[in-house]
Length: 72
Image (cartoon, rainbow, N blue to C red; front, side):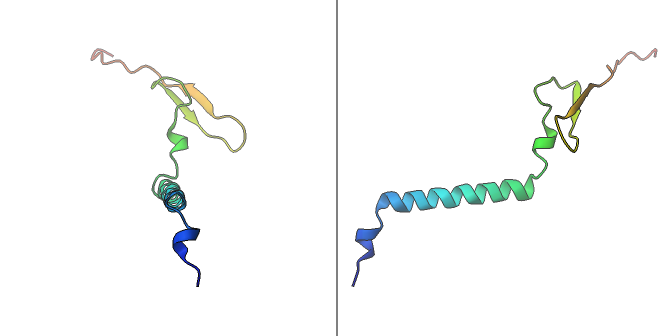
């Protein structure tokens, strides 16, 4: 009879648990936050809006400045 204690070490168990945790984390992010990359502004400031296109880099444009002047 083979003893599992000699085949699987503590380091092996830690590595297996780490891989399982990474897979669960990726599945969670993919399930509950699927559009996380689309919300990024690609390095521009908050006044910019970037929209992903089918192929290539996203298209970014600057939103018009909103003034709080009541006379306009």
